[in-house]
Structures are given as structure tokens and as C-alpha cells.
Length: 276
Image (cartoon, rainbow, N blue to C red; front, top):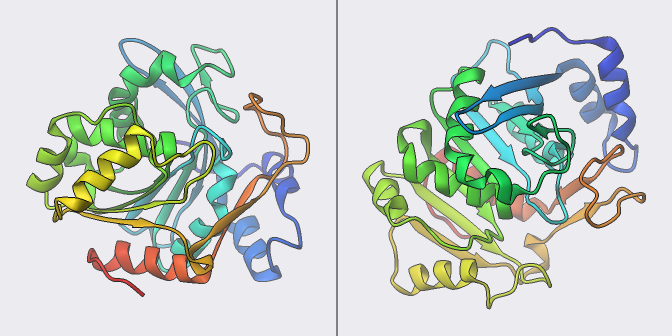
């Protein structure tokens, strides 16, 4: 991979920085450390050109986190930048991507491709991406469709994943049978949160599956309904964004409450379940 920064590209990247969203210290970290790149990934079924942004620690640590957006109201790497900065400051390498067909990532040289076209190839895409990045094991923080993609990858390649993962509003039509088997075999823990909205109903297959595991007191899972204001997240959306338009040219940032941040950091670092 080419890890050299391009001043021209980076200056364009900084268009999304707004003083209302980032303080001066955060802005300096982004300007001095954010690495833009493109990954060309080939599987037996598709060719992907993936838009990626990287924050690498100095010296480079072995601990890496992959941040994956959802398919609904957060279809860009930018949605994670505020949370990624926190992990970067405590010595984690952070990888933020636009999923295939979203943001500025292409599938077979086509933009805006539905995830249904490549989702069955998701595990192979995931494996190839981590190999290209040189990541042996990865922690994952993901929303909705990004979390569903991770479940499919863990079901096939559990050895690629670290012990702690955090999902939110994980909509998935079906959970592969060997997901739990692999998760438990590798001693992994999962923290899943759910905040009901029109796109993430409690009547969905995803919510019902997690709720069933909670009732069974599954040891690998901590599942929490987010009702408290202290755990809420919200977005600063691109005012030009229109439903169905996946190529975003300006910022779309997710803001996280301090209580949620505390939980997330503790969970990744300690690999334990704890309520604040």
C-alpha cells in the first residue's frame, strides 16, 4: 500500500472539517495523520475499488480497528471519524472505509451498486481487504449493514478477528448457523446496541435474533436497548444528501455521547461486559 500523504488530496478531504464539529486539537490530528488511499480488491466474482482513510500510530501498533458504516443514514467513512480519533489517541490503528457501492467505492467500476449484488461475496471481500492492509486480526465497530457483513465474514474466517466487537442496529436477514459456533470457539465477545427508528424496528429479524440470544443469556453477547439520552448518537448530515444518493461530497459525521464512548472504549480494551 502507498502510505504517503498527498497534499492535494488531503486539502480536499478537509472540506468536511467544521469548527462546530471539531476543536483545534482534533483538527490538527486529522490534518497531520489522516492517510487517504484506494484499495483494488479482486475476488472470483467482483473487482472492488475501495475508498479508505487510515490513522496509523507512530510507531505502528499491532492493534487495529475497522470501522464500518451502515446502509441507511450513515453511508460513508466520515460517520466514524469522531470515534476513530479517540481510539487513535489511545494507540489503535484505525481503518475507515466506504463499503462497496457506497461513498466513493466502486464495484466492477460502477458506483452506487446495491449491496445485494455483492453481499454473498462479502466474506471473500473482507478477507482480501485485511490481507491487503496487512492486518492479521482486527477489532470491528460497525453499524447495520456493516455489522451484517462482519457476521458473514466471522462465520467463514473467524481467525481474522480479535476478541471484542461492537455493533449497533444490526439489520440482517439471517444469521449463518456457524456464526455462534465460531464466535464461542474463538472466545469472542459482542456488544450490540439497538435504538429503534423507522429503518430499524424491533419487529425486524435482526432485533428478534439478538433479543432471543439475550433471553437465552448467551455468554458471548451483551445486548442493550438504547433508551437513555446519555447513550444516544446523532448525525450532522450533509444538507445536499438525498435518499438513495450514496456518493457524498461533504461531511456526514456521527456524534457520540460521552457515556457511549466510555462503554465502547472499555469494552474493546478489557474484553468484558460492564454497565456504567
